[in-house]
Image (cartoon, rainbow, N blue to C red; front, side, top):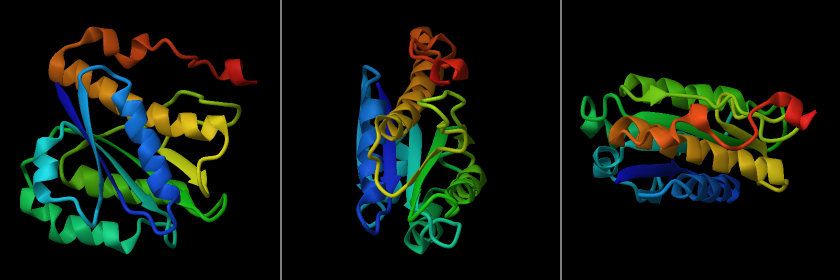
Length: 187
């Protein structure tokens, strides 16, 4: 069984809604245990428990929220060198498009990479003009089907990587995905 941690911080509830959808996507892969934890309640042992982590934060000044960064600086640091080689991805919500979502995901990626996580993006198109290349990024809460699917797809891909590499379940190789991956599908 694989273990997925969806770690998030949310100021307005938008990132929490994204976290719930990421969790739903991860849960769609059989034999995955998924924990959704706000950074106010998450513990350092949650990091050693998980095989993969999806990290979510609102975009603040083009970066992650200070509460999320503080969690990594003060709580997660206790597990430095104990999480090397686990899978990771990120997601972020901002007040509007152009608010720095992708730079916030890159800031989270930097933290995850420094801890030794194997960070990935998703090349799939989930709807016309929307791919979670840097992670799932939204302006506000997930409303449209393609926005919800971006979050679900990110969680599912995380669970697929865990199933493939931790458990050897080849049927979950992302290259064998059954959902539309061709950008022409959404033209």
